[in-house]
Length: 220
Image 1 (cartoon, rainbow, N blue to C red):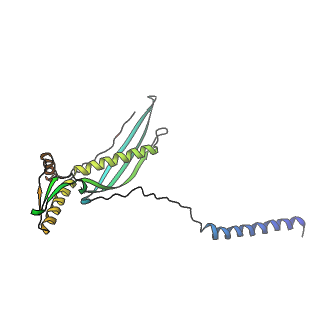
Image 2 (image 1 turned 90 degrees about the vertical axis):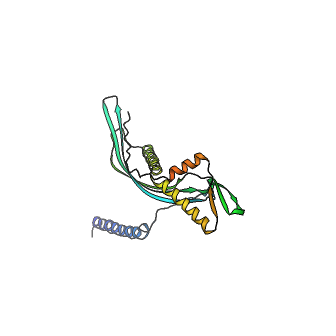
Image 3 (image 1 turned 30 degrees about the vertical axis):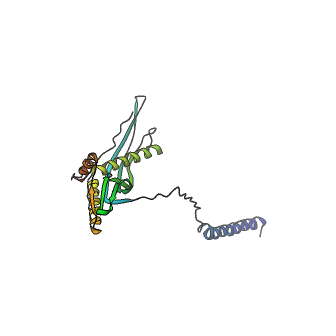
């Protein structure tokens, strides 16, 4: 066997053995490797609260975002997106804001101030569709943050304008009076006039506004 042929066979055999060894090693070690993950959770503080959920609502809103940028009044560079936002809203009362005093001899609880219903929690989910952007006028991280913040604010306003506060107000009063009755107590609402008018407004029936807002922005 010539020296050249022996060299070629040696290189071929060595390459085959090396490739086989690498394939075996990669299947055994690399395939089972996991990405390194590290998380640090810091508990800042714990607060005692007395908040009770009285109504729950689900909302879906559609937003159209558009931003037109004029470049030297010659080129109009446009970016736009369609956003569908969904939210689960919990409305209730913070009883820490309730002011009252007790007349124990008469088993009576006097309410001096009754707080407004408020949004206790809002779980939101957003999806972006039909995203279009120009060569220079492109979406940045600040754009997404601003859109989501404004969408959440609109959802918050819609929830407060809906029938959820009225339902929560009726629910909380029913709960309080029924609970007091089971213990042979009475509740007397001795509220300031402004507070009483506000409570009456929340108690009155209002139809749910199902309108859809949009964020049509045309900025230079």
